Image (cartoon, rainbow, N blue to C red):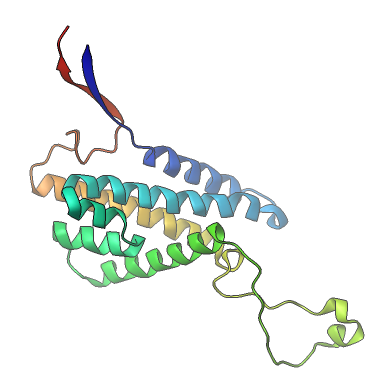
Length: 195
């Protein structure tokens, strides 16, 4: 009987789905673009976290890995970057801002609920004519307010940048990217074979 260890990573599939949906969104009629844009942005968020988990698996072990996996998305990114020696440059700070927006978007989408907002403002002439014309105020953290081609491209860029950061770390430290740990390629290997 052979004992086999399998390691599966779907981050590339998640990113590919996001890329496909983003391209489709760019050619979709304005009133329907959200049907492609919202899932594209969600898949970039999923791909980003999947990559963070995969790279973290190569850097952390034991209890530290468990703590890392259970951290927030921004916490994982900062912890991983700190561990592999990525400096806190302006570019890094911009990445963190986009990641924070990704987290707001993802959480708003995954935990979508009715949000009640009260405001004081002047009514427009149309709103004065009939209450059914009153425009509802939307929360700035609502995923429908965050969705845009520009933000989707930023989400995709963060996902790609994480891969570049990881590749640069591997090159600087002579780590073969195809090694079992640190590779986001699904694979299996024989651990023991007593046949």
